[in-house]
View 1 (cartoon, rainbow, N blue to C red):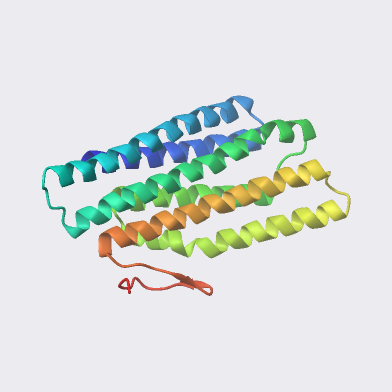
View 2 (view 1 turned 180 degrees about the vertical axis):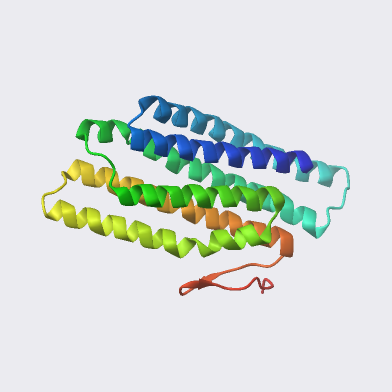
Length: 223
């Protein structure tokens, strides 16, 4: 269990690195960074499968040897499987951004300044997610949840700007599509981070949080 958790923490750090490489590649139009992001995403995919199989093996071994896992242990195994999946999907979004680099390079225009602000925000959210996961830190998990609405507002503002500028003839359709793809994938990364934060809260407290309206509920018992 301890080894699995350590491997999951390393997976999260790898995902953090993939995000940074993909975004640096997009802003710097650096094909080498984009390529490294894609290579790292491939390794993350392989590790995703290995971690899931190892989690299944832990449960199987406990069952076959008659070892009784207590509730916190079961929550941890379930959390490892769920978080592992969320991390793989974040890496997928990073890869999608990296794959957009040839389009951005061909177009020649730099990413608008709002993208840098949103990108830095998502990088910060992922860093806090890594902290929450590594230390099972409830405070860090709550910070991640609190960042959710701001990220969504950034995404909607960027998409709105892009569509208005496209209508005004300031962008080509290809450029607008590339911008929309990057903004949407940044938003997905933040969404997956909040899912991980929810799992941290669950494994520590045995309680769940829900997003209702414009705020998150306090941790509550599962009905």
